[in-house]
Length: 318
Image 1 (cartoon, rainbow, N blue to C red):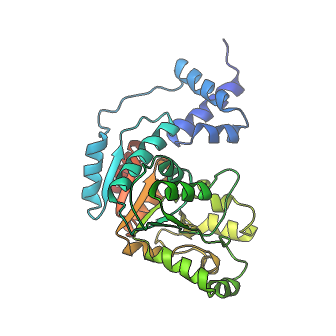
Image 2 (cartoon, helix red, strand yellow; image 1 turned 180 degrees about the vertical axis):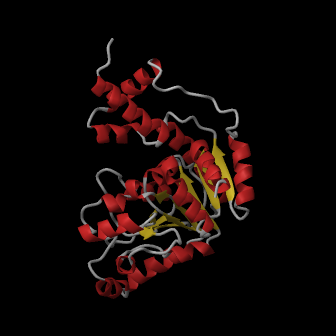
């Protein structure tokens, strides 16, 4: 069958997005305004016609070796690398989440305060938790309430699953993620119950969260909280987002006024946790993962093999 020039260009464009940029097929489908099935067919045809050749790299380190190598680069952090293939995003998420869930099951004990972030990767972990017989466990949200159409936060589901599996008490902050002004936020936070909830998140000894590049940020995608000017400022200056904090390469907020209006655990508080657990299963997040590690926000990293490889290459080529 003859391939038209337009079809060939689309095929090459889709192949570059998937194999070089590491973008998921559903996201490519949105960019190209086609179905996910069409993207899969274009990729298959690209391989069949020789537009794409897949080479097994003998230098690609296996998961265990990658973890050991990364721990030499980041000696204060423990790495658990899931052995994963590049093609199936859902499988990668599941494998990384499964390892993180098993780790949580080994460390959670009676009396713990668990602070949880939001997003797909944290949601996957919450779904894979095993029921554990512990007492007086508290689960607290690390941010205020928000969501987005394209990148759901799953906040309510995450909290409910943690509460169910650990027979825990739920403490959700009944506040919007961002206030219109910092003065109003300060007034609200003086209320006794709100003050107690904020203190709980600061006292949490175990935290679980992920990082986002700007393209995958639920908060940046949400239409309700940020002005067009603020979004433009974030896009031009921020490296990514951690727990609703938009930060630069130095780990500092890019918009101080916005950060003061945001309901979220201060990033500096992450330095004082017994276990700071981060889950990442998307190669596009490797720079933000590097930033979270180097700024001391995490102690335990659960990551897929491809992202781990990208992180290793990034650090060794610095």
